[in-house]
Image 1 (cartoon, rainbow, N blue to C red):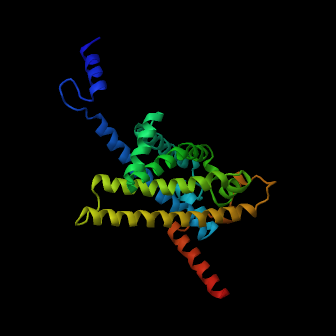
Image 2 (spheres, one colour; image 1 turned 180 degrees about the vertical axis):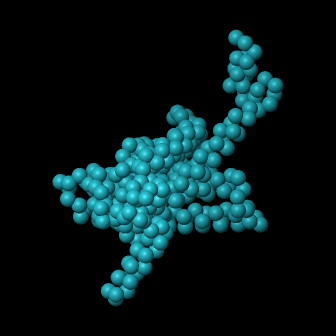
Image 3 (cartoon, rainbow, N blue to C red; image 1 turned 30 degrees about the vertical axis):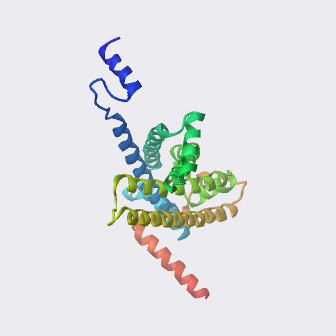
Length: 284
């Protein structure tokens, strides 16, 4: 064996390199885990706002879908679903990388699990319990999130108020999505909280005040997005139940929404919102 192999053996057993210096690799991996986690958390916040546009109207959600297909670059308003596939692929790669980095800290055998459980029960420490929730939700997300992202990569043309609603109800994805909703929102809010604590973001005068504020923020974030997610979930289910199960809507074209000259997406959403408010006001 060479000198490099000898150094690796020494470091693997002692945790310290042959030159008596700790390796920087664990710190680099930790930073990468934080960076990928932050990206995914912010992406999911944006994603929730985008999919929840169905609460404004089906047309608004359709416009958002076409926006991400870069339909505004076409004079006919036709988008390119391949763009969505590319976005989903990039997110999927970051998702897998984050999962790989996070599993470094999972208990990998019964002894490590027992040590974690004993530590948690002895300390009764809230943040330790949050880590346990994150580990469980992360494990679930690895499988459920991979299925969802694969669908987005391979069937981007089916994303929309009708195609997505059809997938929800008639392809029975409602089972997957209800579990994924709670897993994502809990995992993401806890992750942002732990990142803020770990890297010293939003520090107040004292650590106690900082933790209190961050915990309130975490709870509010979880409640807000779970409620928004459930309302959005119900909207897709309601639309899906109105569809004929004998018709494949996955490649359904929204012909009444197709326009040769599209208005800006923000303007369309504002108009739909005002229309809904006027309808509600007129019915009172």
